[in-house]
Length: 205
Image (cartoon, rainbow, N blue to C red; front, top):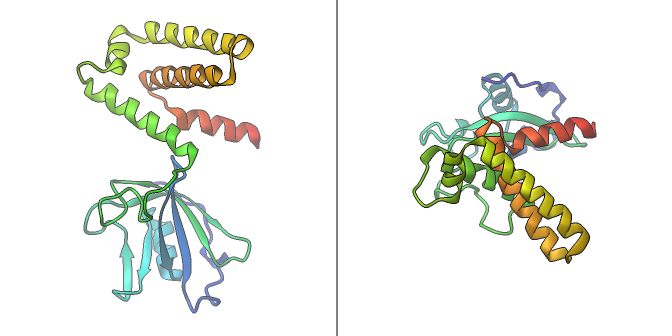
């Protein structure tokens, strides 16, 4: 269980008659997963257990997301808005969040671009685990990390050449090829794009 650093006493529950909205966002993809409501007890339980827990207005009791389905939400961090009356929770979902079997409780729409990177990372990881026949990722993985590293180098050169000598569309396409091959290299070494993003975040700070 992750240790959650958050002080529930900072939250102003009085404005909402004891409840505050809690927006849950996928920590990897930035996709909004759901909205629920917490009272002070639900928030304390969330902090202490590391699993998102709401006050169910229907059941009139505490309700830990996934307590029946097993599709829990593991808390990564909790942030409070400037008015101290709304929570933003970053979490790692264990299965679909919505009772309809969907990733998000919100109807499908244009997903955040960052989620495409997370989706690519997840697909690569699954391909490397299953090694489906006919998959290019499988072929790369079977060739070994040296071959994958060589491809990263080749795609990097092609991206650089496109930046100098080709149009913008060619540059973007070559960059996409580079990102894919880099993702395979990262996964073969037990890492992923989330590790790269964490480094970028630290550098930004």
